Length: 419
Image: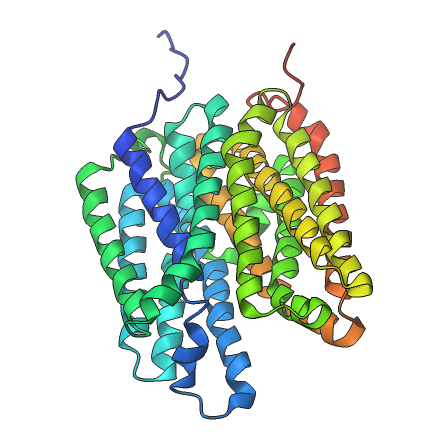
């Protein structure tokens, strides 16, 4: 019997891409929406101001912990049952999490809401797998860059939107997010087609696949992925360390207030949007994904050193130089590294591998703020950023190690395009 070569997917359905975009916005804004509201929300239930900051921190940590726990399981479930039903469940869970934050009534209700949103908000792995299913391999970098730019816009808009809606009540942002999540579920049910045919789904799923540690062990056992995931962990850890106490750093080093810190993060968001929306596409026509990743890491390395230098010279201008370099580095590295991971993965394992990748990132999101705070308090104000620079070097070394392996994978071409 003649066998036909498997065709690459054609242009993706526009409505499906709209659904993915809206979900990315909800994921990112859901994480940042709480930033300006959290201290006031928690203050209703915590009478001791000495533990207010720690309690606010736990709202973020429990979200990251739950994402780490759930991400590989959700990815594996989507490989078995399809992307569409698991995404619908995730969105319903996020809607419930937002609703609990709005209703409140006790601190444990807020923590439960964040835990539920973390468990079901760990759907980035499924969204990435969906794009990998429906977009031709040569177009994935462009779409990942687009989603990264949209995520960056959401990072800029999330805190602003949360603060603006909070003027009507601290619970209002969460009720609005709940409503938007619910509407997106309806939109997805009506217009989002399934991307993974039954013939390409994994035939079964075991409880071991739902274990984040077991899943990490599985994906780390693949030589073409091991160093990519190591690079992902180190890069994410560095990029979490930098902003986690940047507000405190600029307050102590250059006497900035909250409004100026907000402007700084807006500058970062705008730079990332421009890089991922325009520069990334231009570079990918001329450089391989691995080269773009390495270039982005060098920009990030320079950014961390610039910010560390601020502790010695106290220059506001140097802060902006550092944050612009940081935006360029993140705008290049994040989508290019993601493209390398998806390119090194077969279709049946996109969900599981992306789940493992998201778990690695969630683990870095848990460790990063704790590491930054400890370094800042014990070794000096510049130490988190000097440490971040060292961690970026480790990510670069990991990319260097994996390059020879990736060159042997048929669907990943790391050679420069012909002129």
